[in-house]
Image 1 (cartoon, rainbow, N blue to C red):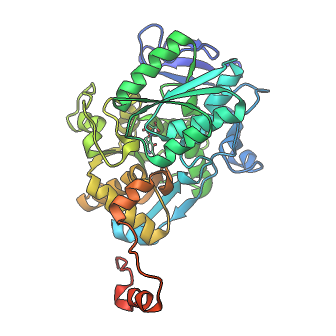
Image 2 (tube, rainbow, N blue to C red; image 1 turned 90 degrees about the horizontal axis):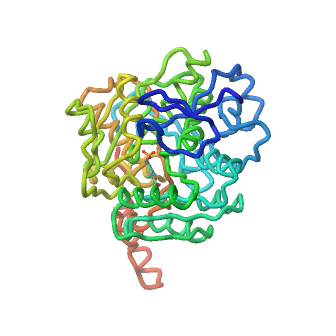
Image 3 (cartoon, helix red, strand yellow; image 1 turned 90 degrees about the vertical axis):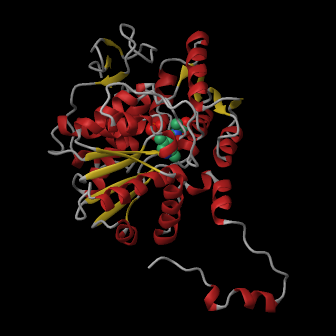
Length: 411
Ligand code: F0G
């Protein structure tokens, strides 16, 4: 893959694919990985197992590299008729990223990012994280024998994610600050100490995450009208959009979807910027939301996300914590799909957009649900309450299971 290079999205300066840089040496802009459009078809892909590496020709990792994998991607696309009715739309699918090896979409990025780290000869990797990135990096570092450091905002990382990072043997550092401060620290440390940085500012991560777009086309047989994605640091929506752009460039699709970026109301700098039609982001200084995964006030990838939304004639909105929690319950109770709060933001945003008329009722929509319910058990107990305790006797049990006490599902 001699045509692979890094390119600055602002000034178009180009750099070699084996340079360890995370921003443009000329102007400081974000980098993306580019390559010439490959000659491959969905028929070629279909001969391989369903997952990230099915699309090998579209992933710019050099031939012969030792791939670090836990069989990521290949996640289900659930048709959700009851949820569609609740949201008021004709057709709604959930792309359930909770089914990845560590329970979130981050694994798509880490299989490529950690493979790149190995091929560059790195011995140690690091990230800042609201939780899922650290869980995923810790697992892939373990799989490949790399030392892993993760920096987390103290007290704001869901228990399941923290448990994963600890058990996979990462050195976990908790800072008394928020994610944005943790990210700045890890960026400084990785530069000064030569540790390979695997936050989504690293464009190789996004090369793995873009495969979600390829899978959607594989699963649906066509391109959906709208793809709704929760936004935090804004890497994922950018990656998925890049996937569609590349499919079009390779002549594999003719149209692209509208990208719908959804943020939590207490952490919505990109949505605010788009609402006011500004050219630059004003960071939110003290972001707050129940969806701790997307509790981010200064997302590094905002220029890529804004480009994805603007160039796809896309949509953007923020949803309140109450809307997130209600939607999380609906996804769980109406469809049997367990997602963490940040994931529910995509569906909550879609329902709002259908109600307000900005998405037509007869649309076909894919909501990306980014992480598993069990990531954040403490949130579940706080919004559902603890189970009722009874003495161990028949009378007390029969009292509890009388029909009028049965749980009531929405119609
Ligand atoms: N959903 C979940 C479950 C996440 O963990 C994240 C990001 C997002 C959505 C937003 O994705 O940042 O690409 O816009 N979590 C990061 C982390 C920040 O550290 O785990 P994004």
